[in-house]
Image 1 (cartoon, one colour):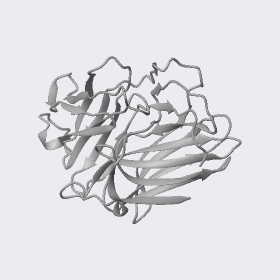
Image 2 (tube, one colour; image 1 turned 90 degrees about the vertical axis):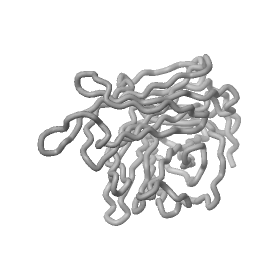
Image 3 (tube, rainbow, N blue to C red; image 1 turned 45 degrees about the horizontal axis):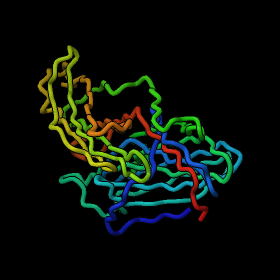
Length: 300
């Protein structure tokens, strides 16, 4: 396995992407030498003293080549790792916060990232199992875990505009206590690897109490293709009584986004509860994913 850390900030146009419960299928292309797909995880933050780990399990009868990329906001690629995973084995790709040459957020040094894994096969495409964790380097404990089995689209089985619904929807219910903030991150993927038809997405987020009353709303931001934007809500700014003894607020969060074109796509959303003091994510939820079929890929 090889690990490469980008020492200069590189502007990278987003290629194919992504993972988990809702999948957008890109029209398949016949493979010339190798074939595969790319999966993308929900966005997550990485704080000092943490590493970001992607683990791939290959349950199939042939090795799978894997290339993991990490991007910052604006489509900036900051890390790259690649290798091969044999049948019946699993392998982890680790990225330490200290190895990523970005200043991070004021006060905590936290950086918001998104990761993707490009999988290629020499024969038929197979499903794999993947996970993403934020890990404390000092004691090895996992702060957050996101996992799922990636089942790729069948070649020739879709129109290129198929959407599979997971049943989760976009509403998330969670609790937030003093000293924490809620972060919702919206990622606007390209409509294809070429991005020729991709358009900006307008996005904002609303927070509701248990009676359906609107208690907080973000401003609306334009999100260019291949980029993501985050929306923060501090517990102290939410005008809702908390539970006795803890001041915990139970809320419902809903993102809203609109397209300036007629293309059918998905916006990948992640929800995090963040410790304001350390910048560490203590809760991560991301019930959506996108899967793009790659078609022919050079073997080198």
